[in-house]
Length: 151
Image (cartoon, rainbow, N blue to C red; front, side):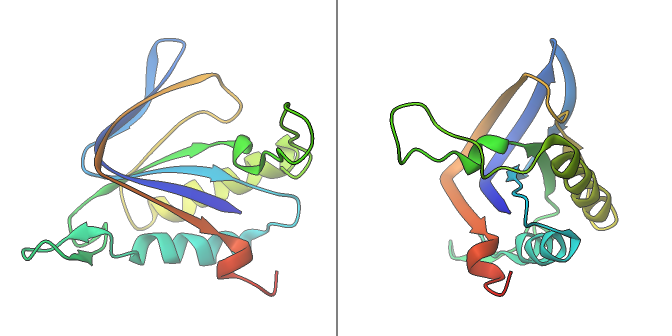
């Protein structure tokens, strides 16, 4: 599982011209899911995401979590985070989970996150237009291969 995290002042997702999710200050998180992922891995990455200290404190040091700044999450499914570009010029997506598994875990992550924080979302499998004002810019990748090595 991969979370591509961007610290934002605001972000929103449009599908067919309609807003499906929007946040003010918080984290825009693109979520990639592979076949070996499960709920336990999702729980570990979500816990790490919510505790990441990537917001500035009063001294300008990245010491605060999304909770500490009363931030929000915008969660967007993005299978292209598992693009394999080793051969040729056209990315392969065979490492990404199939739609049924990926959507199930994406919905699980949303449900678990909503228990703890305000969440906006995209729509799984839709053609989405994502707008954001990146704060920093500050972008971090969480990869379950690094966070959960016994996967």
